[in-house]
Image (tube, rainbow, N blue to C red):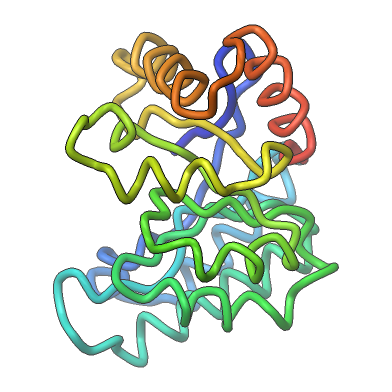
Length: 200
């Protein structure tokens, strides 16, 4: 996965998505390999990691353990994390709190909950990464939430394959500028500064 602003350098993340945890035959071995990659690539972040209730109402112990292990690794190497929290963002925030100050940036990917958690995200030093959902004219609540994110905590993402990423992220940035009521060039400059804060 990649995140960043239109025109900014991408930040590359490596990790085990919560949907894939159950398919990893030996998670301790996976963590050791991720540790090696982090040690050899100083610009690598950890992600997309997190918790998920989209596919099952229950968060398995394996999923929770995988999330905690990867957060600990990110803290050890002081790398940013890209977070997934479908239908359980509150629990993701709670899991991240012990790592505040040790993980340099928390990127909340696809965050679509109401704005009630925004103060907690800001307190963590987190960023809300706005994706293609903002392009949906019916996503009234999502656009309302995006308006309330402090501009210094915003990022944009394509959530697309690499081939489609560039035009998609430009569309997202243009719509975000419209929704926020600010000039596109001003927004892009701010997004680039934010992305620089995330970069290891």
